[in-house]
Amino acid sequence: MNNEIKIKMYSFTLDCKAPHDLAKFYASLLRWEALDMDEDWACVYAPGTSQGEYLGILFQRNPEYLPPVWPEEQGAQQQMAHLDFAVNDLEKSVQHALECGATIATEQFSDNWTVMFDPAGHPFCLCAMKDLMESAGFQLQ
View 1 (cartoon, rainbow, N blue to C red):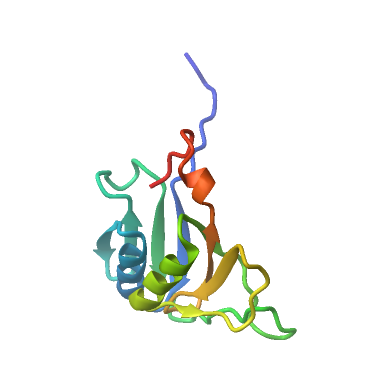
View 2: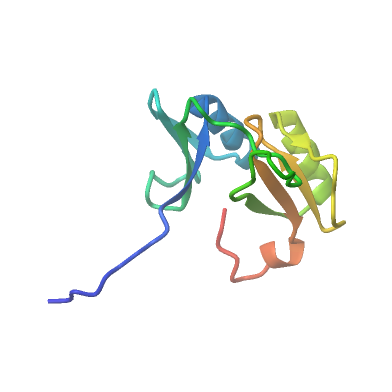
């Protein structure tokens, strides 16, 4: 009998006031599938997979959710995490994100990535990684 513990990443969960709306945004951004689980939960997952077969993003309703301030400001709601997305064309990907409903952060710190905000105010980065994405070992969708 094998009693070895197994731990696998299942999802990254974002709090928000409107989980179904935020799931639709990320489904559009990533060209993934969206699933409304119930009134308090929604998720997105890679096409051709089922929930749990591939790392997904969950959205949990939190009526008290406050969007973080970025960059940080003392006394304001702080960023706890952000998502990074590899892209093969930064300029086109930023335009696509804007069309999906994202906004560009006023302050930027690199020419290699663009900091953006989803409709609920969570920061995320689009990172120019064409070489990595085209490498044989890159598996993510």
